[in-house]
Length: 75
Image 1 (spheres, one colour):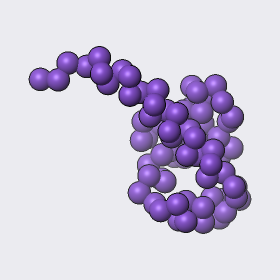
Image 2 (tube, helix red, strand yellow):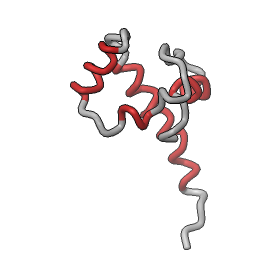
Image 3 (cartoon, helix red, strand yellow):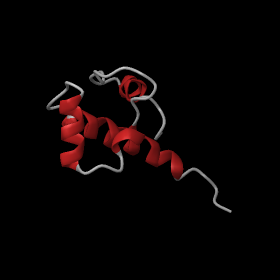
Image 4 (spheres, one colour):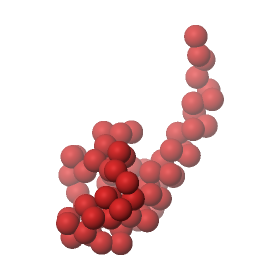
């Protein structure tokens, strides 16, 4: 998930599109940043007030993937 394009993750959730396109625009860019750093980065990219959408995409993707983790057999 960390290297999947955010636009692809958003499409899989059938929710609002992530406005910044490109393969390099993935969770790995944002995951180690503080909330203030994420906000600053989004402002620099010209997308202020999109941190809520980013958080929603990441949380919904994670909750979608969690049930499948229970199906795995751990050895």
